[in-house]
Image (cartoon, rainbow, N blue to C red; front, side, top):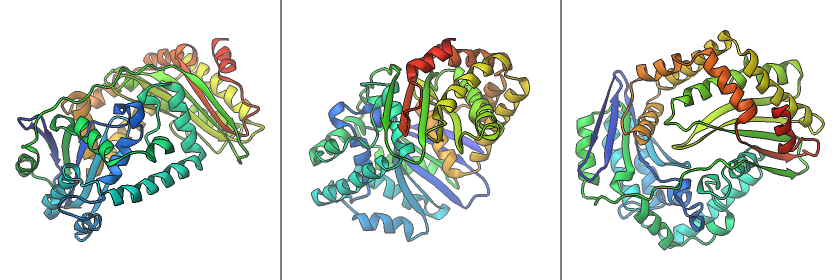
Length: 420
């Protein structure tokens, strides 16, 4: 399998990887415009725009967009994150050109029909309402807000209902004009694809676009803070975030190995101590996520009202213990989990296309798998223990609690326990 990468004169980027033996392909456009690129009055508009892309173009109605892909047995979808918006499809190899035509059409030629805007506004407001009814969605939004208070990175991707209710056709067109230039777009494809054919299609479809520099988002600042809301729920939801490296820092590999060993699987410390030995919860995990210039290591658990206090303090104790006695065996197991998860995931052309786009977004190129594996293997036990010490004692923290959480310690109390 060979990765090929090119760029049109206007800055539009193309990256692909042919996977021999496959009869299907994944293809999409990744736009480097997400939630953190919105001004406060635009909060939620990147996600609204993603929805509207499927509601009709100059050539196709909303139904014709869906039928074009589903008539050939394919699948089309999109998502909005804090740093990108993606429009992608999975089709058989003979239908790659069709998928490219449909995706290019919805990205370049949305009509923003006023009637469809009102229909989709209602859909998104329902989506926001559903999120509020899902405690483990709400708590992560609150945690993000406390981690990056009063910043675009801390705002919800869906946006508040009052803003979504007010977006106009001009607002949508304005966001496209600001952020959907050729230099902000990456065409990524994997599977049964021909790079030269993709280049030709990209030139025909996107080559006419005039270059325009995208707006650079403000640098992130991890602020920390606490959000707590009492509510009659079956479970008390606990989420703790700690400032971690961004994805351009080599220390991101140490952070990911640490969170995997701490709470990344059934053999992890938190799972064994909190769930298996003490029976304090059904779900508990730790994970590390990253952005261009910051990252967070997050610990989440759901438990009963009378056990949330014990769960919170034991979690801090386990973090401190990891800094003292993290073993070489645990680090080796976490490294193996990371490598296996990455390599198994890359057996899917959709995952591979996602990875290619993300790496081009981050680095402007695609580092080899061998380089990535070498960086994972280079993380030693002492590296993880040193990072664990930072997480346990020094790293700025944010806390979110939701449900019957009267018995949960405050962030200040947890900070005192960290320092003790």
